[in-house]
Length: 269
Image 1 (cartoon, helix red, strand yellow):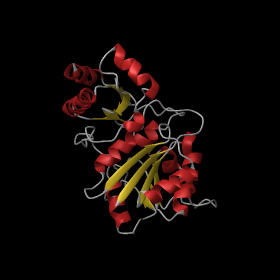
Image 2 (cartoon, one colour):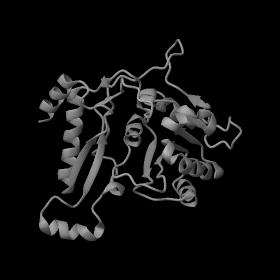
Image 3 (cartoon, rainbow, N blue to C red):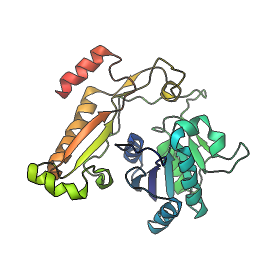
Image 4 (spheres, rainbow, N blue to C red):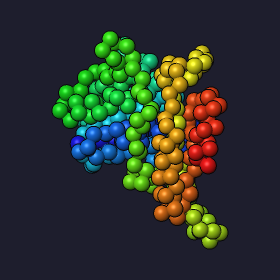
């Protein structure tokens, strides 16, 4: 099955880097499926365009992640995709809080065939398997045997295949400036900002922020080795392309554990 992971823009602001969730879910997709990535900030597309894309590429499932500021665009794109017969699963902070809205249970239009609540590290492989069998459920949630929400450990973090993923749409070097930069010095054929996480969660629960509600109030960390290996993979890719890659740590509280932060930074150095 061919799968499209789509991150919408909100029509107002533009992100300077892609969202991590697309790359993470691609790494978590079971073998035997082909994954395509489109970030609306880097590759603008309207409803007609995305409907045409899924048909031309024979897409069998579309995953859309969105925060509240981009949910209106996300719903419009989901509607266009479902109108041509392709199922849509939606996730992210907004849908987690308003699952009934996405599923049309609040009196409005249904926008998604299924929703993934919370972190989808555990549920995504199951979603793909169910979609391939034509048996999608309405709601997927990571819960234990007692029905309590289960947060994934980051100790066994999936290896994102940065050496294989097509990152062409995320090159920040304008085509007209590429030759000029190359004359100035080698290594500027491409420039990309890549998101990376070393931990998730926040204990503070600020009323204006969704992080604690979505990722939980306990901090979970990746191993230093996992983070360093990912950095080395990105570094090798930049060198092989004659370009530059900057890493942006998207942790909600990167330095909340000072001892751990110093340990990680020493290993990175």
